[in-house]
Length: 311
Image (cartoon, rainbow, N blue to C red; front, side, top):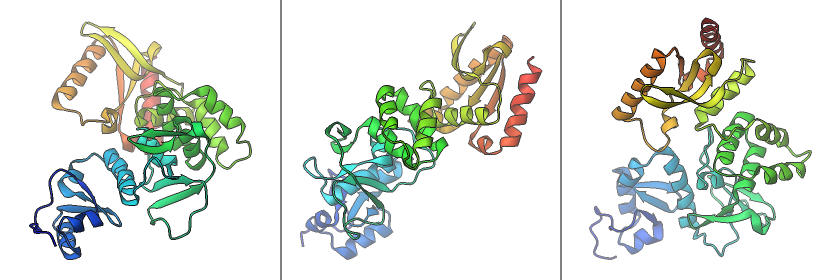
């Protein structure tokens, strides 16, 4: 064994296979001790990450880290026959996902044996065309459009709509998606895919906005406009969803709206100043959070009451 202090992990890297830790001087007992005290976190069998690195990561970064751990642990390279697909490809493409687990999805040309992958891996078998495969973060994964189609075929409608809104926002080709739909007639999940494509709106900026819009439609409430610009003495302001003629705005306050950072005191202050300026020229606000999306009766009453008061 190398002369390495078992309490100190080597510097310069944060992700290790068991063999790499062994080579650095850590036997099974030392690795177990590091995991117990939180210096290491076991991401999957045979793959570990530095504990403080894992603790500092946002949930969506951790989800991508699990894919990186799979690639690191299996030595997946550009020359291999393994392609990350479905929700794993969606995460590599930085697409919004809602209520989706962290299992790693891969697609291969041939059917793998039942013991060739861990329990955290879902293996799919299909022949991918050359233009169905791209590289993101150095890893082979399905193209943006192929990813959207594969995900929508297995997800529910609302999950699919969240994904589709964001995919169109970052540049997914509508014509190609439509063409792919035509070749999937009769497939399980194709109705959800088509419905999501028909109702998607690339102006939606967060999963919360997408789900708010979907709920309003499902409750048969007059649809609002998206990303409405209003001028005040404080300058131009943009509203998530608004009924312009009634001067009613619906704003989603979930933290995911800010996606890559939590709202700071400065951001919250600016939001309050913005709302004050809009209120002064007659705007009313309906502010909702995640929990409101699942209390549909109360949500409907609040929205209708505000819209009627504004008439």
